Length: 448
Image 1: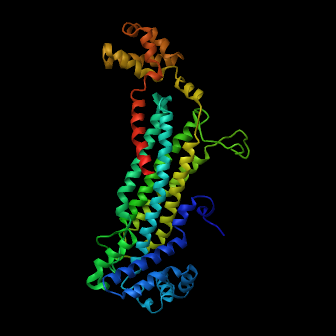
Image 2: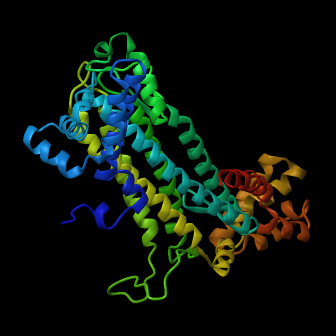
Image 3: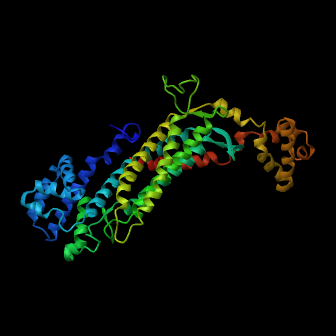
């Protein structure tokens, strides 16, 4: 019976597969196999026995491991015994010199490597979608807003470019943290490698080479959790960007603004009681589930504060944190891509909102034009006074300015009109977008 919504509502099949019970078992078996091969390479165990272990290790079934664990109440020892059963006399060398977390933490590194691969692919897809939107709307002028109030104009292209650059930085951060996080260890009970004699460093190095991942430099019984914390914090940072994007979509879809809206299927229902409703439910889901991923940061930070060479408080916690954070992060990237890809624009509403304040949002533009004649401070005071008069009198700023001699003495009607045109006051927005699009289009193409 499914209980957790991840089982039946959230997440992609590919990320769930990374953290499935079967995938976990396969990674554990791969580590035990690599360990045996490494030990044979340095002469710790017979080469023929290591080969037997490597050949038979993946014959182990989840059912048999569970059956043994139910009897002995130790997960890794159950795994070891299940492998040994498949290997005949060579079974005596399975797990030789290792402690449980040599196997568990190294398997976790393999899962994290796979999870990062899935997430990175999705991030590039989102990046490509944002870049296309930025290019398509490079000249779509709209009302900029600060403090929730309409300010000077901006463009939708610039908004998409800003978000694209932020996603690009998350991809860079992922590349940077990967070698710190995707590492395994073979250190024995407290990290001294005493059980391997003088071969400990070589065994660890060779084991990780077989697995295709890095090695810790030093460790106690476990891989230190600052590494895992970095990955979890990276996911929290990434989903917060998705949260920010979707908050913007939700706000811009408000009835009073209505400049954009999430795509809406033909038979989609917005409300069980209000037939007219068209709600930004995908964006709301992103914002809601981002809170869960962020909530994983503190537990994983605390998983680094263990007693001495280790205790078990991290183990149960991580069984939840790692798969849940990865599944939800992947899901939210996927969902945000769908939101951006299906976004609908309402040009009439964008134009309406640009003119909503009757030109007051162009006050800075007028001030800049006037300042060329009388200086910035005096120009600011004149335009501020004119803006107050326009707002209180319910008039357009244009009409107020044209009636003021301290303005018309320096600016003609055509100059004032030009300064009041939103399309002529977007600075280098288009140029900035073009630079971003050119760079990130290449980055997406290089990623394949």
